[in-house]
Length: 246
Image 1 (spheres, rainbow, N blue to C red):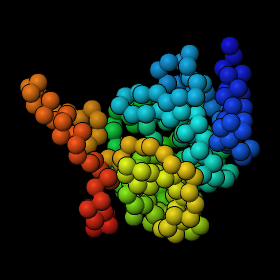
Image 2 (cartoon, rainbow, N blue to C red; image 1 turned 90 degrees about the vertical axis):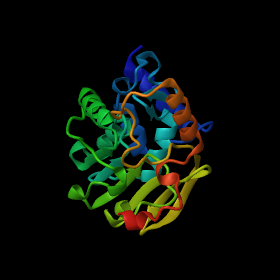
Image 3 (cartoon, rainbow, N blue to C red; image 1 turned 90 degrees about the horizontal axis):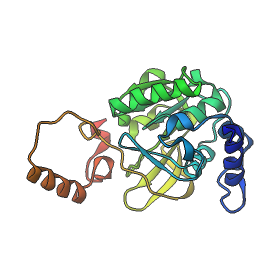
Image 4 (cartoon, one colour; image 1 turned 60 degrees about the horizontal axis):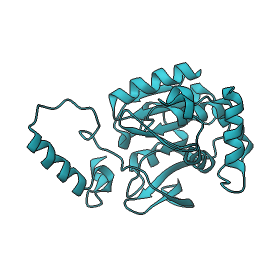
């Protein structure tokens, strides 16, 4: 079937009262325009309303992505930073709404940065800049931003991201650890909530996947897996004073 028809069906389902995650014309139009095939491995299921795993990260389901776009409320000409850009799909839709030259993305995993660049070019958005950065520090070179999207959970709004917002700017992020709420942050404080979500915690330097490590024994692998399952990661660690680190 024609991918454009499948995209229309996908967005129609997101607008239907049974889901009602897309309501604005800008999000509707952008999601109908951006192909999902370059961003997923299973092209035959690209428009199914489910998430995918790719290169150690999650490609959001259309429903989850639609909620982010509605909360972000991007306007034409807005400068936007996507933190945790992953494979690049959300950056592509945002670029459709505001122009690809106005969108920058960062990710802590170098492999994902290369993947996002390639995917964005194949999807028709080669002008989106994607760089390898620790997302906690944002991308100060292109600040201020009218909108910042953080696609990872944190216990509080990262100070550097708040500082990089333009006056009247908005940061959208999953706030919390075990129980998370999708929130919009303005002037450093949450101003709107958009329901519960479940995202991976924001990683800090050294926690990114696909890092180079020494060879380990199977016993070490088992011990490490058990420790990883029990410990909190990155911005789940509420005892860290993140302002001092930034």
